Length: 112
Length: 113
Image 1 (cartoon, rainbow over the protein chains, first blue to last red):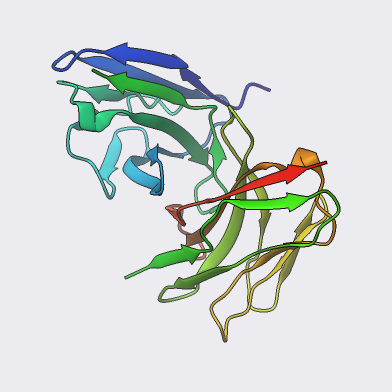
Image 2: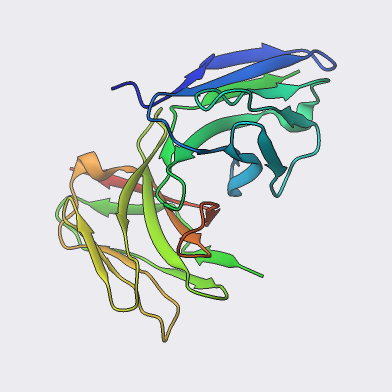
């Protein structure tokens, strides 16, 4: 059982470049979310989705876009990367009505 | 608003020592507290949880009791092992059926033999 899969594991970007972080889950979870992890900051919610076609902003949404066209996939887009977006990004999913979240292994992003 | 405050680290212990990592929170409604663990190079894994007041979660020798009167969910282990070296996150789901988690800043534990 794959669970939550994130790709790539590592990425280096130049300021102004765009990229998409992929997240896929095979557990048929309705809820998916993106967090970023920064030293001394814990995890902060970027965007989340309660089902296909429905997304909403979290605590730190600026500079990021999301869409949810299928239950399985929840990509995170950086349209114009900035050094402040250097971080480790985690995708998570859960069943509707459950507050137990399952996390992917993370994507480590550096923006130069 | 809702927030989680956990003991700052790093925490360095010798093998078989007793561990306590404090966690307190502020929340409205009926929150559920969690502990997640992140081993080096990996994502977060659920360690234990509680769903109602005075619930005791336990897993892998770790325990935490949800104390509603003190809004706390302190993590304890009687005898740590080198393999317990990791970052521990206290988290809160503000609503029983909610799905958004609020995380503390994390506590790094290093255990030496």
